Amino acid sequence: MGMRQLRPPPPIVRRLLRLVWPLLALTVTVVALPLLVIGAVWSLVDRRARLFRATGLTLLVVWLDVQLLLGCWRLRLADPLGDGPTWKDDHERLLLDVLDTAIRVGRTWVGFDIRLDTVMDLGEADRPLIAFARHAGPADSLAVAWLLSRTGGRLPRIVLADALRWDPGIDLILTRLGSSFVPSASGAGDDRLTGVRRLADSLDPTDALLIFPEGENWTPNRRERLITRLRTAGQQARLRQAELLRNVLPPKTKGAIATLSARPDADVMIVAHAGLGRLDGPRAIYDAIPFRRPFLVRTWTYAAVDVPREPAAIEAWLVERWHEIDTWVDAQDE
Image 1 (tube, helix red, strand yellow):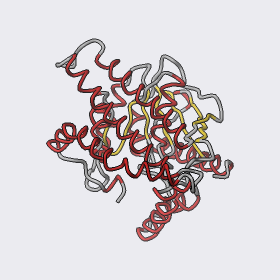
Image 2: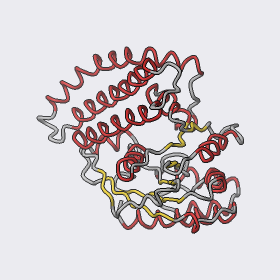
Image 3: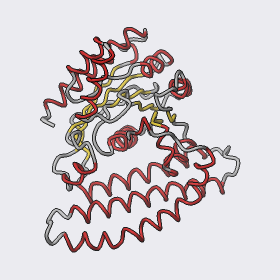
Image 4: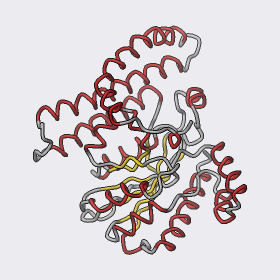
């Protein structure tokens, strides 16, 4: 089951998860410790120490999420009403600290090495930035958010699947920072665009908004299933797009149209990445540990005046950009 099919927890379950998550994390740690020991011993046979690395990284990620949650609790105790002058800055600092640690841990434990193919242009400093990114491979959203934060000082607000509300730390801190958890496509109607419009309207000149127009991680199987569905439905135009694109899914343009129409003043960044995109499941990721290829990122930035704002033109423009991403990924021999 993909993230799009997983329903978010009801509000009462979300609150319960926030209370019990540290205890659950402790339980997971106790259960996993024998596996960590076995992995350490087995590394004498498996020189890549995959079991040891994967188990250790999983535990570290669990406790980083607990750190986010406990940090949010601490900030609430310091500012019960959440209206203090440093409320947003304190949460951004907490999230950035955890992001820094996560990237450092990923590099150390499994070789998750983020590199830029070109200098990242963050656009004009006095204009908001909207970033449309490829979605594929492990931890790509984490890596792109970290790059936007640490390269250009723009911690992005993110449009992400509401199924991620099952993660208590992510749910709490991103809710407080105003990110948008988008409902599943099934029966969601225009609700999927409500949060996107709200975020676009609220962007300050120094803000960034990060969107993944494909809606889900690209994998070869997802591409084939999409082509089959489009062929069965007789959607010839979109079918031709899907067949031409080998390394990305055709972008869903409604969110981009809503965002770009709402913010004609925003610069736009297109984000491609290569190196780990074909690691399309737990087994593939495990077999590749430690990663021998870097997470290579290429960006293209367009001034606000060079980006179309009419719906039909936006759709054609974004589809063209996605073809450019596809060509670039092909050139990296992913």
